[in-house]
Picture 1 (cartoon, helix red, strand yellow):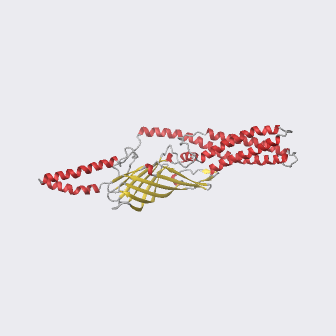
Picture 2: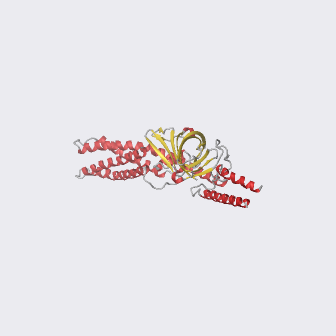
Length: 185
Length: 222
C-alpha cells in the first residue's frame, strides 16, 4: 500500500510542478517607461528608469502583471518642466502611476519566442482609475527572462489633471505611453 | 527491497526540486520590491480580475507622514506656480520692451553718429524711459524665478534646456548690469571724442543682452 502511494506521488510530482504559477520580477535597470507629450510649440519626452513590479504566469496561461512607477522618477531633460509636471500631477499626494494588467500569454514550448497579445490594463494615476486595452509584444527570451513592449495613449483630462499651458495655449490632451519592461524569474 | 528503492527515488527527485525552488526564490535579486511576494489574493485559476496586489502596502504611520509631507509640498507648489506664471508672463513683456529699447537705441545712435542731425530729443527720452522700464522688468522677472520655492528634491546636475535658460539669463543679467553702467557714462561724455566708441559699445552690449535673453526664452519655450 505504501509503495503504491509513493508511486502515485512520484507520478504526480511533475504535474504539480507544471501547474505552479511562474513569478517574474521587473529588472529595473533594463526597463523604461516613457511619456511623450505635445504642445503646439514643442514636443517632449520624459523617461523613467525606476519601474518596479511583478508578473505571474498562471498554469492556465493567463498572466497577471502589476507595475508601478514613481511619478518623480520621470526625466524630460528639463528640470523646470519636471518640477512643473510634479505640481500638475500632485506627485506628493499621488506618488505612483500603478498599472495592473491581465491577459493570456502562456509560456511557449520553445525559446526564444515572440507573441503579440492584447492585455486589459487598469491604470491608476492621480487618484483616478481607467481601464485600457493595451497591445503588448511579449518576447520570451527563455523561461527566466521575458521582454515586453507596450504602446498606448492616455488622456490628461481623463485623469482629472489640469493641462499646463504655455503662452496661454494648453498642451495637447493625449499623452503617448511607451513601456519597455524586462521581467526576470 | 522495491519499497526501499522507491523511497530513495522519491527522496532523490523531491529534494533537488525543493532546492531548485528555493534557488528560484533567491534569484528574485536586489531589484525585487521588498516583501512583495505575490499575495494570495491572486486567484490561482483565473486572471481576469484586477483583484491582486504584488506590491507592499504602506503602514498607517508612513501614510500619515506622507500626507503631512504632501500638504507642505502642495502649499509651496501653489506659491511656486503663481510666481513662475508671473515670471513667464513678465518674461515675454520684458523681451518685447527690451527689443523696443534696442530699436530706439539704434535710431538714437544713428541720429547722433549715422548722419542724423542729433536733434531728436524725443528719441533720447524714449530710449531712456524704455531702458529704465526694461531694466526694472528684467530685475522683477529674475527675482520671481530666484525666489520661487522648490519643494521637490533637486535633480542631479545635468545639461538640459533649463540649464541653457539659466545660463543665458545669467549672461543677459551681466549685459544689463553693463548697460546700467555704460548708458549713463556714455551720456555724460557729451562733447568728448570717446563718446562715439562708448555709444557703439552700448549698442553692441544691448544687442548681445537681447540675444542672450531671446536665446534663454527660446530654449525654455522650445
